[in-house]
Length: 154
Image (tube, rainbow, N blue to C red; front, side, top):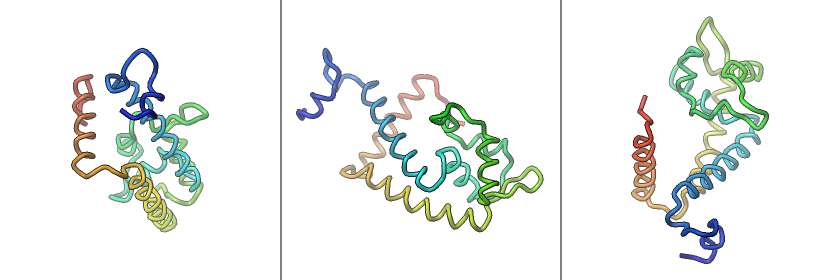
């Protein structure tokens, strides 16, 4: 184990044995980095997820709500509703509401493509040094743990 790993681990236990420590640390670091990157483009994580979902097809607010990660509507200012996120995207000219359906505008598509490139660069940076097989193992292991804790695929 490296000195940095030993130093960063809470005292009294080996960091290798503390799954919750590493999951919490990585989640915090990842969330902060993604939120900072998206904020530079005027988006929240939830708004980015909504725009991604709309690249496939127009959707209702109910359908879009199902595409959000469980904590996506939580912001530094506290929880925000799906409707607030959608309203901001409409006001920004990135979405249009037609009846019950939300659709990306041309501006939203172009902006979304630009942000997608930034997010892809961030993903590459975050997973640097990991092979595709290692990445799949990590994700698969986390899915197994989530399932053991009661998570069910929707």
